[in-house]
Length: 129
Image (tube, rainbow, N blue to C red; front, side):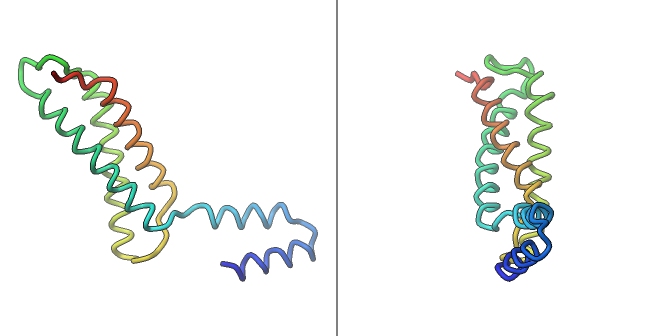
């Protein structure tokens, strides 16, 4: 990657159009995430997914126990879990097929967002005694 950076800098100086070269270089170097970061995000999601699954399991019986919000479960928690699970599975499958490779930043960001969203939803709605 350094050779690309040096070549981009030399080209930039020769052509005088640094903005376009820098933009292209930044796009390539920031659209991926190290495998270690992906695995940390996967583990964080697993913890929150377990907590959300526990909340859903607790709240499933009829009549709904005190402290449960079925609307939040159906319309917010379950869809967020589905998005996180999809991102997690895709990232893990990619990293298994390409050990040590960089993971996709879009999927990583989706996984991190799902994790923080679930944390927020559980903190606001999990009123189990």
